[in-house]
Length: 419
Image (tube, rainbow, N blue to C red; front, side, top):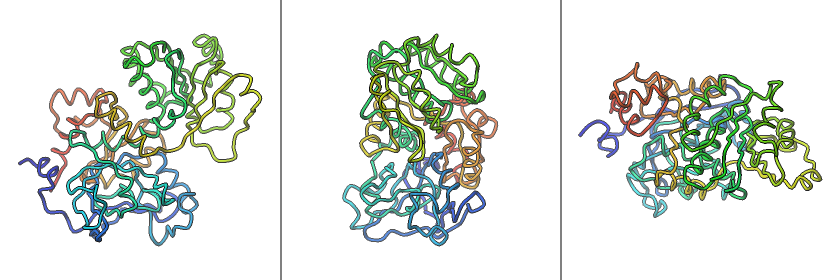
């Protein structure tokens, strides 16, 4: 039995300690890597191993706000610490006798982070996935979704951010007659997911009229990265990817040339209220404005009369529900969606803070996947992995093209796993 086979079968002795990144206050200077006793589950608990946890900009908001973060109201952060991470793929290594009946020893799960019923969330007041081993009580168990063994660990953990994308269309989705789809501020990981979702729908025949997918982004580096990653995917789907810099003096003319009657559907990922308000000038009659960016409450003027007479639909979303995660998971299992298309880099526990800083500083423009059980894995872009470890020629070629997969993940574990 290989190391990876032993790992998957849990056929090894679990350590007595666990590494965990603990946040005790505001700022990266309050983030520390600690070695703690591995927790044992109580009668109603489950103990788990974190297999992967993709990093999110929401984690950066917690680092920046510290105890002032709204989700930490009433929580003693200095005393109890926060363990970030809510995009989790885990395996159960122990199940208490009074845990929920749906909890299966050896089962693989993902977690809906927002525990709505209990007004708390995993990765905030409930310790999250930036650790190697942990325990969840029955509250969290209600929000755990089983995952089949055929999926890669990163594939599973990336369901959570994709579920946020899915949730934003729950009430108002793209329609078969839509010709233009615009992602405003679409150069980051979530903006690219919106583009990938539209292209997947186009390939599946759900958007036969879609001709242009517009991504506007003020960062030339991000815009170039979008073109490299998604240009061929758009062509293969039968749509044109249009990349625009909103700072250009030609932006208005370029938008009008692509969508002379206005765009049919706009997703606003730019977190600037006035930018979102202004973009409605480019939305056509009967068009949709989907406010996806994390804007603060009470910000942004809304002219109800203009919305009425332009016959616009304005919708918004933050986070996801269990149903959204189940829908995305089903698409992944049917082969309709590849969540690994969002991965750009990998990292182990000891360098996880570097991964968070890369997210904060936008030096890595797509998702960073943390592998807690590979503690010595340095922060590495996918295309640089073949120079750090052994991969098959076919996998190495895919990595150099920036593509992640379960096969690449398995070979990564073969290189860095130590049991």
